[in-house]
Length: 192
Length: 221
Image 1 (tube, each protein chain N blue to C red):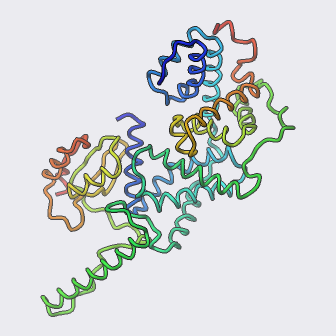
Image 2 (cartoon, helix red, strand yellow; image 1 turned 90 degrees about the vertical axis):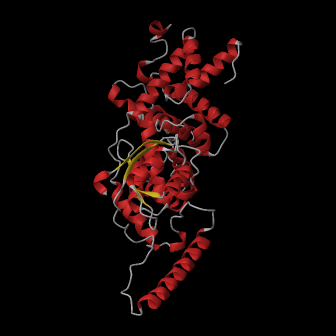
């Protein structure tokens, strides 16, 4: 059994036990997802309080609806779909909690001189994306979901996911022209 | 996936595939298509490299700042424990009913069962029986101690939840612990089921194609 299949089997078993009201299994599932959800939400919100509320709203639903999981998707897709809806509801309630960087901070997105600064620099650029595009990219690159799974999580068509990813990539290419040393005109000799 | 010989359409198709190849969710055929295209397209090679570095930067995210989940979990338990019982976890077995209807049915069944047991006790023993522990537990009580497992089993990873439940019901077993890191579950006889021989239970499990491995736990007998 490979690592991914083992994790899926483990999470399905936890969910089955949660459906039977087992608290130990629920705590195991909560522990597994809290870190993932926190990291995802930290990219779309600037409020720790609302992030925790969104996570607990998500698991409130998981506790009540575990028996309705039909098994036609990965457990992570099912839980992320709930989390995405909870995040939209919770974070939209508080105006401005869906954090974005104002236009006048565009200058902050500069060429990185030190590789260690790259992540902060990427983070700043990510915050320039509209929420749907940012979430699409995070679900794909942070959490490794497929195009079809992201459509399910965000409750939209596969075509919409592709379009959001397309626009996110274009915008990031403009914001991050030198990511990882790929400055315009640089590196062509190595690849061309 | 539709194939095309139009170079522009192929380029667009390859371009769209890049993120899904980078994050490992593309099919082998899609990976091959992109790989072939990359050998002759500098734009896509640059974009592939850019996306790969973006993915790498995001996946190397620092984890400091991720809080301890336990206080939040305690708050969630407090919220769940304040919840009326009929809104608790909904067992998935049997036809789907509303949680309120399920709770009402469960309550009536428990009352009826308690009455029958009490009547039988009086008729058979003509003496008051000591108070028996409830045959059920509320959702807010701590879980009962795990029963002695008689079989270890590993299921196929694609086994669906309802199929797993059906399989356990058919074999008269329930999960008492697991899965371990290796995906191994410990199974015990269902409450009220006839005494089960561990060897026979393991054999019943092995007969199901969704069971990858099953063995009796001899020491538990």
